[in-house]
Image (cartoon, rainbow, N blue to C red; front, side):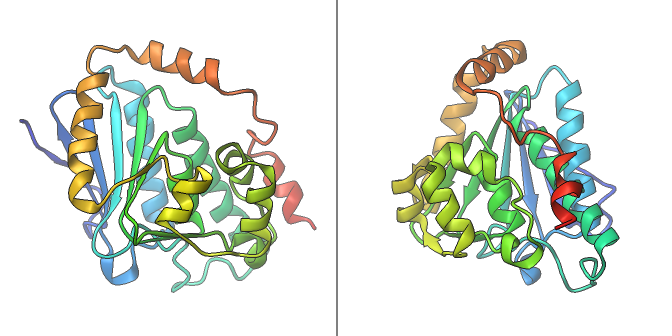
Length: 239
């Protein structure tokens, strides 16, 4: 097995990248002291990692995970950045761009959710092709109440249905891993010690499949997304 820590530009090691044999790339959010919150640098770095995977011929699988107890707590608000409309719009546009890149990617994506996934962190997981959750995992979507923007909610509705998505976002309901699996938000309910076996099996299954075939399959099973355009976000922020 070949292993390489990539993403050297993340000077503070807030993201760890490990490339494995068989076209698998593991991406670990590595800020456990901040519950792996997303600051602008991390979002930019994740976007670059995903874009690089678009271009290379090898990558078939990207695995997103969080260090420590939680998957990702969403936007890092410790340094501000949501205080004025211009900054808020920039932050939201950058994460929505990342989500759309993951959703439309010519490779398969997996989120391994061992703990809390909140806000943009929950959106990150929801936009992956596989959402593997432990029973102690939890999801919450508070962004609508914070900024009035329904980030990724159209894609969430594809997983859980229109009514469930409406209720989760409107009421900012917190659900655990079992509830997430029951409603379709989690694709698999597996304990943390089972996550690696699942990913290894998936990577082996993907090895003979071309990236073009992955794109064709995604196009075949997904109807056109009426919200699949970041141009709608500035419009919604005007409200």
